Length: 86
Image 1 (tube, rainbow, N blue to C red):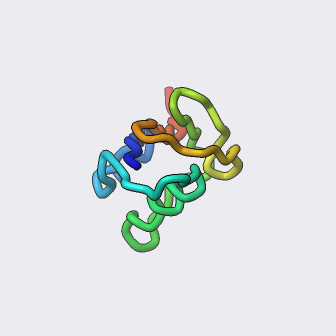
Image 2 (image 1 turned 90 degrees about the horizontal axis):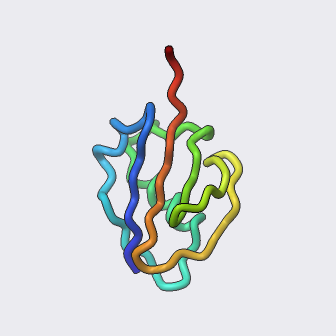
């Protein structure tokens, strides 16, 4: 199954090492996708736990606390890192 991924906000530069699409086994869940993404980041790098998690246009929480969901082929996972400033 293919899952499109996008990282926006403060951590967008970390997305440079991430592919635009992940291949996961049928029956995979959001937990599986986030683990795979974490494994693709360079050593010692993580995405902030405050990143918002959106799957197929539905907000599921933050990386620190999100609702697990079954993935479907073609879904889009968006991780939105908080941005501060003014």
